[in-house]
Amino acid sequence: MTAVARFYVTTPIFYVNDAPHIGHAYTALCADAFARWHRLVGDDTFFLTGTDEHGLKVKRAAEAVGRTPIEHADITSARFREAWAQLDLSYDDFIRTTEDRHTKAVQTFLQRVYDNGYIYKDVYDGLYYVSEADVAPGELESGRVLQMREENYFFKLSAFEQRLLDHYEAMPDSVIPASRRNEAIGIIRQGLRDISITRTSIDWGVPVPWDDDHVFYVWYDALINYATAVGYGEDEARFEDWWPACTHLIGKDILRFHLVYWPAMLLAAGISDIPSFGVHGWLLIGGEKMSKSKPNQIAPADLVADFGVDGFRYCVLRDNPFGPDSDFSYEGILSRYNSDLANNLGNLLSRVATVVGSKCGGVGPAPDPGSPLAPVADEAFSAAREAWAALAPSQALEATWRLIREANAHLEANEPWKREPGPEVDTVLGDALEVLRIVSVLAFPAMPGVCRQVWSRIGLDASPEDQLLPAAAKWGGYPGGLSVTKAAPLFPRRKA
Ligand code: MSP
Image 1 (cartoon, rainbow, N blue to C red):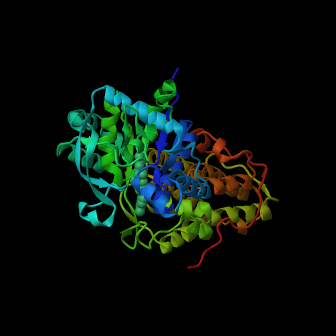
Image 2 (image 1 turned 180 degrees about the horizontal axis):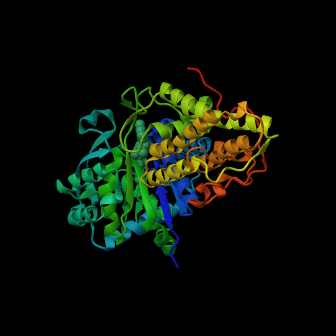
Image 3 (image 1 turned 120 degrees about the horizontal axis):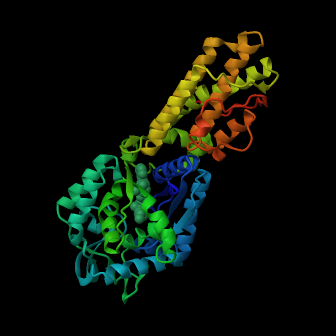
């Protein structure tokens, strides 16, 4: 018996101090699309996201508005759940680092690291980064970085240099894109120093189980969320089922924590399976990264209002390849929306529904088994499968849209709207309906709501998400004899 294939995908847990913007949404949307694809191919899938709620920054922000830290975190964490609901994200679990289950898992995990001899006490004399990973030391005056001298517990990161190098050597495909693996190797080769992982001067964190005076520094509590959510310390069988299937999606800003510190922590806790990573660049607005201090933040809701949730999802995934930085602009979304959605997919659906109405009495005919579109559909599926597996949503959608464009070209070449009803017209329309059926499955990870609608407008029962690939992409699945509905355009053209 073959084991069930599993796919466990995570986003970073987001700092509650920032309101969700499209930079956060990008990672979460990619994770959602990958999770949906894996469900379609029959993998047992678990998609985790959540919020990072400890640390001085949250404590200070709460004080500034007269709330306790947990009151503040309750309110600000909810903003992420609301934003994710607006984006139709199908996460299986939303973890908050202030939950009991997480406190327990962090304590169990780090107690094991301590018992294994990889944590020791020493004096920390240096900078404390209030929360960001990427603050420059020159920012001491800003209040984001504090000078500190206190007794801390240290993690023996230096003990793991060789094992980390061996791991990245042995698993060259475990990081996408490969350049980020090289970056991690470069960091490790420069030499790893032990890191301070606790604080005494702060109390908004997870208490160190063997020493009441300390809490864990926010990052070492945060990373463990990925283990908490699949039962670490509580349900070992569950943890062992999911852990080897884990893929972390992260932005390039937090590479060092994830590709260097976290694998070392896992090894130190006796966990030898190191996750895979997908590291993406930044969405840039006018050449700059979005951030709280700049007025360039865009809330996902603003774009959803203009393009619909699926229009927004499609354009973001299609136009921002996973990996490099990419420019994000309203004009870019607008032009992608009009060309791929209003003109291509929207047009195909409305033409087919109209002509089936006028030439076939509204009843969709079956496709031709020998259609010239059959091999095009095969190729689209193979290319999309490869691209989704390689964390390349943009290429997967490009492959799917080649099929849509070919189907439109096939209609134009045959002009069924100009012909008398009969078998020839039926064949051309049956082929176009079959393309719409296959596209509803292949594009589902990007546009779940719209694909469900296309599916039902062409008369099919159930939903694309109940289909199983590769069978569902095989040419000939549209049975014919179904009633095809003509309705309002799915993607009304938008003007600037
Ligand atoms: N809380 C830490 C992560 C802990 S994970 C154990 C953190 N949070 S964050 O709120 O700052 O979110 C960081 C993530 O948001 C980035 O790694 C990236 O995935 C996403 N992005 C934030 N701004 C972004 C862009 N402008 N562009 C793309 N993604 C960005 O770091």
